[in-house]
Image (cartoon, rainbow, N blue to C red; front, side):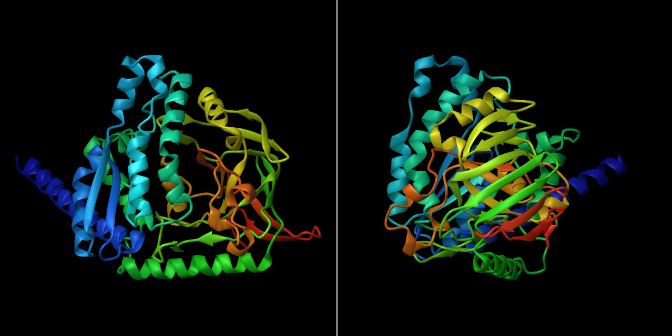
Length: 420
């Protein structure tokens, strides 16, 4: 009886501490991630399980001067119901009206927060072709709202929340409550909440990322060469490309930190100058589908051969989204000593996994990765465009990265996954 009372006390203390840390996390997202300004509206998309956390975010948003906080909750299990019960023809129906409204609000100045906590294996047993059709209609509906984000028209932030399904996938041997607590701790560490002053730690981190992008921009490499186990890939960089990382000044004049966490510096490839092959160093969880052992080969910028040990049908559906889905829109460098990488854990969540390894992204490029004075008002003609933006992790302790100049001279940038 005495032991059970002690266990109950321990669980109670863990619950109190988790709530306290969640509140600090919510405040960090509002003040550092979004840098929400007085008078701004805030639109939040989040899984239904994150409703208590959304309330914490809303409280800090109103304290920061938000005029209105509007949550849009998503129940991903409805996707299962749709695939099981809806007619095939209905899979092509989209809710563009909703996302057009979100895009209109963003265009009027509303900030945007996206909270991720999807179940990585939700749709693994579903028909890949049907899943692909449903995703295609969703991507088309979402395109207007997505453009606001990819062009950094307003301040926005992407953050993670430890839903029970996701936590149980990452920690399969634990009780659900314990798995959630363990995943939450990983998220808090990645968000630098383990530091005495998280806001100061983020300022110092953003300064360090800025120094790294300045260093890379000064060298103006023509290409990057990734080489190591299962990888020999040359990525030509877009003419007048710009390296970005950490905080970002948006078109509305607000400087935000779009990803919490973030340890990447990234830029835009030349969509027609990618040659070679790579093998992903981490599995990919995408819209409820799990894909492992991804191998891609490129010629003249386009994927010409693809394979996956698990989820090959899902991979084929992704590559068939549109023409841009077979070309690269981003290349990013992340050191092996980054906080998420040091955990040595696969999170089956792109926000975390992309900050543990250097990566490339199939699909849409970010327009801010080309110098503004060189765009000539037509960024879509200079960069890859697609309905998707899908990060694939290719970095590891076995991968070296060299910068290649136009005259062919080379300079080591990363060795065994870390900055030289």
